[in-house]
Amino acid sequence: MSVKCEGGMITELQSTNLIIDINTRVLVTGSRGFIGKWVVAKLLEHGFTQIRCLVRPSLKKTTSGIFPGAGEEDPRIELVEGNLLSHEDCHKISKNVHIIYHLAAGRGDKSFPSAYLNSVVTTRNLIESSVQYGCLIRFVNVSSFTVYTNRNKPNPLLLDETCPIEKYPAQRGDAYCFAKVKQEEIVFDYCKKYHLPYVNIRPGVVYGPGNEQLHGRVGIGTFGLFLHLGGSNKIPLTYVENCAEAIVLAGILRQADMQTYNVVDDELPTSRRFLSLYKKKVRRFRSLYIPHSISFFLCYLWEKYSAWSHGQLPNTFNRRDWHVSWKKTDYSNDKIKQQLGWVQQIPTDEGLNRYFQSCQERNRYA
Image (cartoon, rainbow, N blue to C red; front, top):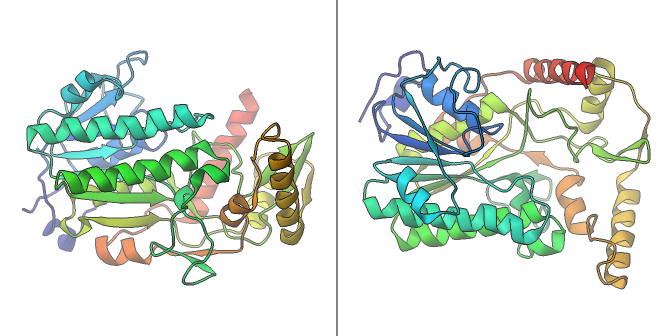
């Protein structure tokens, strides 16, 4: 089935491989989130006319000013209140839906039970409800780079889709990592059980206006001093609009079935360059570079003391996490480019400038 996407950027080759047309109903969970609102914007940009958005009951119900490119009370967007922990709500939002873009997750949850509940249980509820209608043709699960171990890889210096997943995510001391690994397991198991085609998307560090926090891959702030831990490592950045475009393509192109794609931009900056630009364009602050050998040893000591204290000191910094966050690594986006024809629409320099400008404005009014 082919489609002409008015105002969109789908190529002629991509248009011959679409599995839906622009009048097909799609569902976006987490639609008001940092990435979710741009996924909605990209669907609008490609001409889609029936976009159902799950929103929390407590949020203001409007489309204008929330979803880029949407008008006031935009008829192309259907806002539906609901909670994915409710089976009844899951049945309601998944009715007559052909594609699900699942972005809702317990991103801010600090505890393991809460993260599991809001990322894993919700995903299971959504899949179980949606398959009952018999019209769902693809489930797009948005995961994260956090699921990778970055240890014992086929190519020690490269992280791509062939790299191993963390087998013991609880030992990383990161509830989000634990939940994302378990969420992927639920998607794989349940989609196999129900013979449901899926696509798994793993973005790197998604950045842009609205997400101004300095990422932990650069370093951590402590006692008024910023510890720079990344050094010459590249940061796997993906600008939020570039990431959203990749997610949309993964949902509508035939060749994406049962695939996993990493999403990172081209021309990735090193941690050192990123921090230098941030200081120059946003604000100055004190920082101290910690060489990799020293940071690895400090993580080892933290890990051992946490075990000795029986968890009184949380196992926040450990060697498993060090390999993911601060080990020298290159990142590949070859697969999504070659199979889906994804291209980086917002150049890295432009994306960084937009991000730094947003950070300046946030600091000005903080």
